[in-house]
Length: 108
Image (cartoon, rainbow, N blue to C red; front, side, top):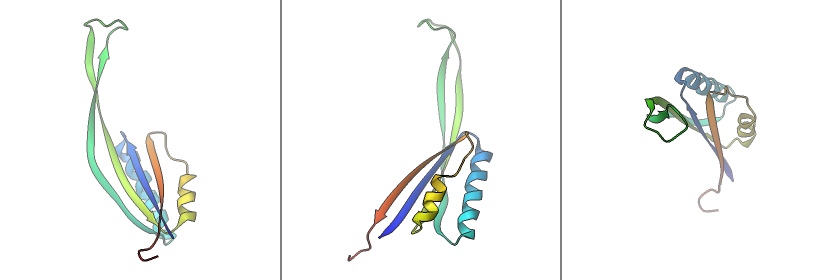
């Protein structure tokens, strides 16, 4: 059985996101782990309305606009390293999601 660990990184702070992903990629390369990525997805823009008071009146400020950047990576075959990555500390501005998938070889 092979373990595939899928990592998704998201942040509104692109330099912090790039630094985290680049550092992790270098760490995985140093340890000799098979890794695919990082892959970049197109940035996603969001718009949030801002009301000037708590009542449902007409008073509104300009909408708050922000962009979220994302990166994807996969770690193949090293569940020990994947566990280590799951325990790592990341900056608060970077959100990480981890999914571990167990794959059986074809014909088994």
